[in-house]
Length: 390
Image (cartoon, rainbow, N blue to C red):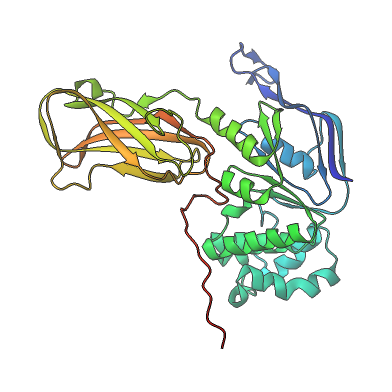
């Protein structure tokens, strides 16, 4: 049985068209004619009871509009949305707080706005305060709260609504590491008791860990739906399709330049695979002989998080190279990255300063190899130890 169903849902906005000639309106103020903008177009899907679904896509794909429709902040232009049960939307948490009221007063105010009765709030207020971690400041006006305290209290109120459906929007980024761990534990508990969860996020790791299924939005339409690993692989591939560029526009006049980057698993297999060896070759061209040189390959998640840094800078002094072309080969005996698409930067340093640096110059596609259940593969040996029976 479904908890959420969308049937051919579309949402249209009208925006000012600044590219067309402006007219003069009354009383003499200029205005631009409006044009249509379809944020969503014929979107249809179902979320089953107890299912966890992640929704991903580039900026402008329609995720925020879909979020507002599911939260009933706005209505669709066409199509039908059906929602069964109580829905709690952890979106812009704390947005309903009054700065002059205390944390305790705002719990009652915000809880009432979210649909909780006064009796429900009274029974849960201690748990809300404890979860937010603000017991010492609960009777202080929230205008004196730090931004982290403010958001934590708002999250805690919404999380204690005891919803049938939980709608999450980048909320795992709130608070410090300890509070994020609390959020993850809470979501895991809700999954275990069969709550329906919809997560709209750029955090691919969270989608992979928390979701049973994923949807990929692109230009207001569903491009793909299915297993999170397959959907995120497609999304990463799309995110990596941008052109490379040089950070330094005058790199053509540099003393040394990167010429290419390539990856391989073995001499006969050009496809890098998880838990298999990997060769990375960085080509270069030096205009003059150089000393104290270092070569770097930086591998990033699409989100921009640095996964690993391959460098020759561990040698002291640095490398010495002759004028002309050449290549540096890096060898990794066990590639621990999980399957997926990664962004690659390369650079050459001379005496600790860049002489050439190229960002987003290549992609690394890691294919499946050995099974990896977490973020990284770790080669492991095991044995069973027995003590002698007395």
